[in-house]
Image 1 (cartoon, one colour):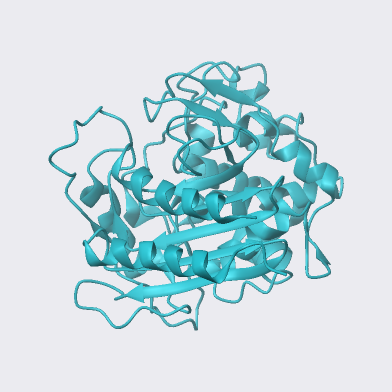
Image 2: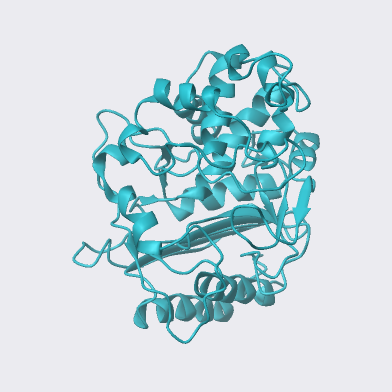
Length: 375
């Protein structure tokens, strides 16, 4: 028997529709698993300002919601013994740093917990080169840390994915987009999700719209900058087909909810085991926290590839429990797992709103509605 009454589902659907009616975004999807069962599966609106009707199959740019997909791919290799969290990156990628330097001491754990000190690179704002993996790798090899490795939690907005992706390639011999497909998307039947689009796939991705900040909210100077400017490159077909493992995942809410339902259930869903429970517990343990993240200028609690709940800005409910883990994507999407309630949640939209308040308001409203309705 479902733990969510039909009347509660209807009220959650009405709230989902309300967000569309007031113009928070053009189109959206909401999917929620409870106890391994898909109990909410909504889609509405359009794929863009002049787009087609949004469906459950519409694919969206997932922005930083991509990071956990890349991270779990790496975690699966750790589980197999191909590398360890406290290995130095240079143990597997010798060109990464010169011997004896601070950079040479950077560990896999520091990369996954946003404490490596490589939070920005010279190509972060050059989307025309994102499709050239060799250039990306050479840039990371040439870059010196911006802060002492292991000391300063600072969100690695784009570099996280390239660092993780190259580690995956070095230890497995397989590119990150292929490894993620083989190790995560394929086993969990996430057929509409990938890191970028591959050759032969239609570019039917929903159009991302960066909205102006709501003018009655004060801007606290948090986040990555102007919504529209940051989002604009992600409508380019070349970026859709690039490999940006921190930001250009293409997928659906239904697929993302399956991913988090699996992790909420200790790494297993519908008879498929993605990771062992011990690995899930270890990778979602708190690794670093700060009152002022060095990139986003706001409080943060980092696990290994995930954001933890328990802060005022965690997008997992107004008073999100500390044990909840997941990730948000550029003021437009969010996915999370609650292992105590066995819930996997995903809300994906094509409207980028200010991540410090407006986006939190809409995603937390839906998260709260689900939590309150659980019986």
